[in-house]
Structures are given as C-alpha cells and as structure tokens.
Amino acid sequence: MITKVKGTYDILPSETRKWQELEAVIFQVSRLYNFKEIRTPIFEASELFHRSVGEASDIVKKETYDFSDRGDRLITLRPEGTAAIVRSVIENKLYADPIQPQKLYYVGPMFRYERPQKGRQRQFHQFGAEALGSYSPALDAEVIAYAITLLKALRIPNVSVKINSLGDSDSKAAYRTELLQYLKPKISELCPDCQARFKVNPLRVLDCKIDKDSPILVNAPKPLDSLSLVAKTHFQGVLSRLDAMGIAYVVDKSLVRGLDYYTHTVFEFEADLPTLGAQATLGGGGRYNDLVKSLDGPDYPAVGFAFGIERLLLALESGEKAPKENYIHAFMIVLGERSQPKAAELLIDLRHGGLIVDTDFLMRPLKTQFKQAERLNAMYIIIFGDDELNNDVVNVKNAKTGVQETIKTIDLYQYIVKGIQNQTSTCSGHCDSCEDEC
Ligand code: HAM
Image (tube, rainbow, N blue to C red; front, side, top):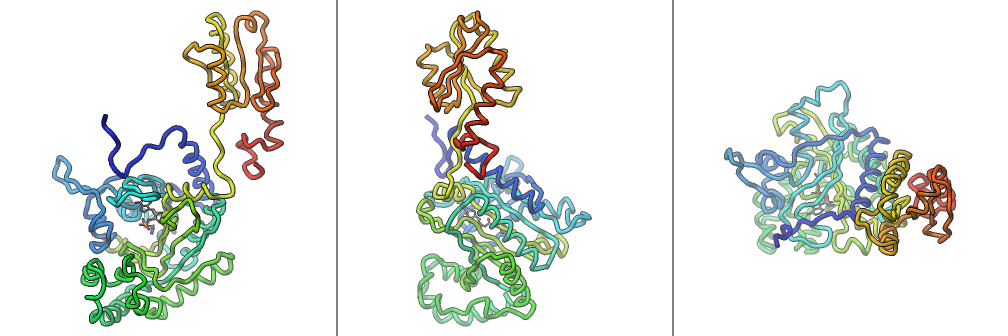
C-alpha cells in the first residue's frame, strides 16, 4: 500500500465541512474590510524565496522543498505567501493600479520541511493578507483589526496580540551594530544555531528557541530601544489606533519573527488553549517596506499577516461554538423497483427547492437505509415504496421527535421546509441562517 508522505494528511469528507465553514468566515470578514482574493502558483523560482524570506532564516536554510524541473529550472514549493504575492504584484504592475492601497488575501497550501507534530505539518494551509501601497500606520492597524475581527467572528477565546517594532532600515542598521558589539564576546556561550545566525543575521539570535531564557538574550539590547524618530512615530501611530479601536496588545521587545523582510511593526496572535498544544501561535505578520524594491519593484511599502488554518481549526475545538455537525435535510428511503422513477422526480424537486437530500443507491433493506439516514444526520426520513406510489403519498419521519406522518406527495416540499423552519426557530443547531443564535 502506498501511504501519504510524512508531514502531509488527507482532509476527509467528515472534516471538509469545518474547512468550508472557516473559509466562509474568512471570505465574509475579507469582504467587510474590502480585501480581494489573489491566487498565485504553489511553486515559484527558488530565487524568489532565497532573496525575500532570507538566507539566514530557518525556512530557507532547512525547510524549503527545492527541486529542478525537467527544464533544469530551480523550483521551490512556496513555504509562505508573501514573497509570491509580491512577485505577482510586481509582475502584474498592481502597484500602478488606480486603486491604492492594494488589499489582497489568499488561502492555500504552503510547504515546509519541519518536524511534524500537532499543529505543525509539512504541507499546511495559510490564510494570509497583504496590504500594499501605503506607509501610513493606519494600514498596520487596519490589517491587525482585520485579523482580530476574524478571530472574534470565529469566537476563538484567550487570544493575545504581541507587537513590536524593528524600525526602519536605518534603525535596523544602527541596532545591528549595537547587537553585534554586545554579542561578540558572549556568542560562544550560545547554541551552534545562534553562532551561525550571528554571522549572517544577528537579529535572528533574539529569535532562538533554545537559548531564549539565557541571561545573555534576556539582557541583550532590543530593537525598540534603537528606533529612529520616524520609526518611533510610526509605532506610536499604530498603537494609538489599536487603542482607539479597543484592541488589546502587549508590546514584546523580543519579538523579531522568523522572516528577514520585516521593517517597523511586527506582531503575532497567540491563543492559550489546550487544543493547540505547543503551537500557541495562530498567526503573525508585520510591515515589509523594502521587500518590493529588493525584488526589483518600485518603492512600494506593505504590511500583512498569515494564519495557519490547521491551527485556527485546532483553536476552534476549544472555542465557544464548535463548527456545526454535518447534516442533510432529508434522506429518502426507496423500496421496490417500481417506485424508483417517481422517487427520482421527488428528489430532484426537493433539491431544486434548495434542500440537501440524499437517497440509497444499493437497494438495501429498510433497516439498513434507516441506519444510513442516521449516519448522514438526516433531519427527515422520507419512506417511499409501492404502497406510497399507488396512493400518491409519502411517509415522513422527523428524526428528532420520531413523529411519522403520511402526507400527500405534492405537499412534501412544503412539509419539510416548514418543519425545518420550526426546528431552526427553536435552535436545533441544524440551521445555516441563524448562525448567531444557535
Ligand atoms: P509565519 O509566521 O512563518 O509567517 O507563518 C504564519 C503562520 O503559519 C504561523 O503562525 C502558523 O500558524 C502557520 N504555520 C507556519 N508553519 C506551519 C507548519 N509547518 N504547520 C502548520 N502551520 C504552520 C508567514 O508565513 C508570513 N508570510 C506572514 C506575513 C504575511 N507577514 C507579512 N505578510
């Protein structure tokens, strides 16, 4: 038997409803903030990620899926969305579009060769957003608010926002010199990874998971203390807008994030929930004012974030309201060959009327068909055999109350619709229309 590749998994039919519901919330919230969807390929020229995410980042050093295609091109399965969106924005000249800033979002699979564990896969999915074309701190606040609205709409509890500023390129350069001086005499006491990072990108030493509690890192100078006036003003601009919107946050001076392209604001969304295990970070992002330019585009600032969809789904398991169960409105039990054509007619009428209906295709006995209806979580079970056909009636059983009635075939659609309306008005949990009340 050929099995799935390590770190990948199938999303089975029993789980896809949860994904669809989550995606529906993503689409609704994106509409509220007027972000438009963009879809880019899942593989790109390797150079794109090497030049953007950063040679010193764990992603590029150890985690990318790189291969040469049959034309000897170096290709990488995208480990994240930002670089790909920036490539597309430059290539399609979206920076010259009359609508500015460009507010874009995406949902799709990403690939990182990491050690698989709960909430960490090699193929995982992200919902990400990128807002490009404005230096204003209002845009940083806008994307953070967008992310918070999503988490609120999903009713994920115990969420916290960590925020920091790395400063503009001048502040970053000044800070780099200061950090190098501080770390130089101490670096041999830190882990081999830190020693390697020290040489290529010392900022990433602050990000070390092994030595994060060592006094060397705890007492290290922090980017926030080296901000230029412009960078300080920008950061204050972001925080004051978050305050005005009532969005709570914690300034975390050690937050640097694992990708090299950030300038100014960086932030992460965490949830303290048992279902998340060790992976408390739901998502993160920040400003990247220099990335478009560094990939041969114009001066075009940007800010964005990405959430791991698998992590959002894990968080939802601890939430106030777990996604609704799969259900169907009715299951039609058909008995006997002669009643089949009429049953097909009834089914298509119910479906054209917007009802979710299924039936038996294996000519199974009555009891087994009832079992199938139960497994599919049918609200109503319609029984249709020769007797019913002869008398132009159907037997309809309400799965919840157990009440069974014989009704005229012509009244079937109305009967079920009315029944569903009655059930949903008392919040059975089966409705799509009264999301908030159920
Ligand atoms: P990131 O922090 O690398 O940022 O990833 C964002 C989120 O993707 C993480 O917080 C996590 O929820 C999820 N994630 C990452 N790796 C895995 C994995 N192996 N398995 C499951 N989930 C994972 C970025 O990717 C940036 N592009 C975000 C951004 C957008 N910054 C600016 N714009």
